[in-house]
Image (cartoon, rainbow, N blue to C red; front, side, top):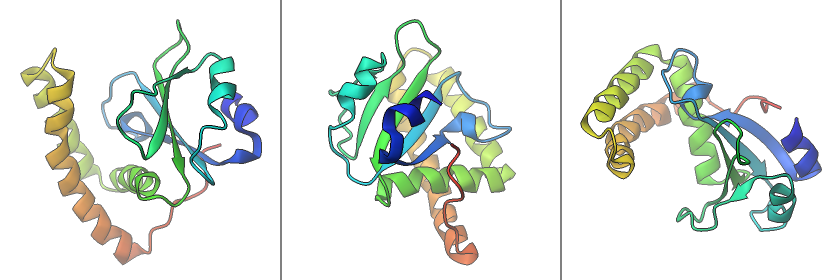
Length: 157
């Protein structure tokens, strides 16, 4: 995989996250990839940009470095996060919980469809309104993680 070649040993994990990573969950055609690194710094920005990835330095989430796909390629979002950080673990837990709980997966999909109808051209509003059901699911995921002793499985690549 190109990302493994670019990051080499700096990538502790590379995982498919987001809605497209959950079988049966309807999703926009956007692939989200999380790359877990030992330390979140800017050392790899030049390498990704040299490969055509577009660094979004204006991204307000300071817990990650965020990149978009090269021009003319299918939509891919790269989220580089520090291994063991809250945001890295949260993304993996949310994905794994939805993979294991089809009822919550269905409810989440239904809510996303409702939001698409309400906010067809207001992406910010759509994202804001996804928050409450995500937090409800994460509360259940937290309990599930404690009951099962959840840990992230093997890296996707």
